[in-house]
Length: 283
Image 1 (tube, rainbow, N blue to C red):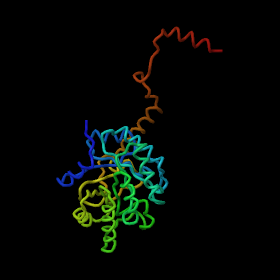
Image 2 (cartoon, one colour):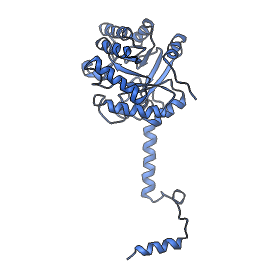
Image 3 (cartoon, rainbow, N blue to C red):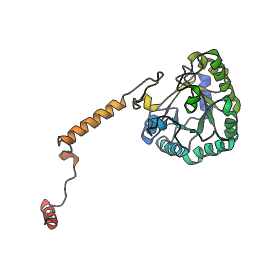
Image 4 (cartoon, rainbow, N blue to C red):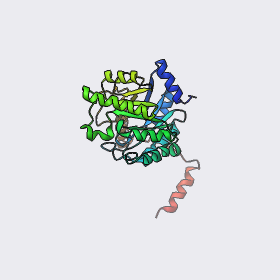
């Protein structure tokens, strides 16, 4: 049985140069498969809005959505470090709101920590949550919840002015007490600098090499069909496999091939007894 990672383990891995591999998962089976494969961490991301619930973005995702999916993932991966992703509207109003909702992840879904987006502008939120005794992973660079302010889902830090803002955000996250940082869609040169600059682990999603990598499971498995980000390596084509299986099933049903004799339950009493029963109901 795998032993769940701890913050100390993750820090040791950074110092030893051992990369952390983690993915998003939103349901029991995916979490179970990830734990069986030896995944270091699982993020129950608000990307569930697009990947599982069919929304166009992450904004509609609620705390109830996140809690429910975190509970399913915990049941599937009881021995894996699990991160609850704070959805839009769950921490923007105040430090108190942020703490209350962070607490819900731990009490109701048994997550090990939470993640939230932003750097300088949410520094007080991170500090309040960590002061409440809850472990926090920061998230900077391309932050999907505020993509409207960023002009869409665009890479960040590609010019010097923008890169300075990303660095300031990274420093703010560490100063506020987060134990790790996720950097999304920034140049690898910038990520490498931030990784060297900070004492805490720095992880990448589409941001080049650092202390570890995150991918969305629906992208990695080829399930999400709307688009595939540039930074995603697709390791399987589950959509093709599922579609083909459904097509074969439809064909078998239409042609009367399924169900064949091997897929049915036969009677155990003599057939004559059943024929008598059927006659009772015939006019």
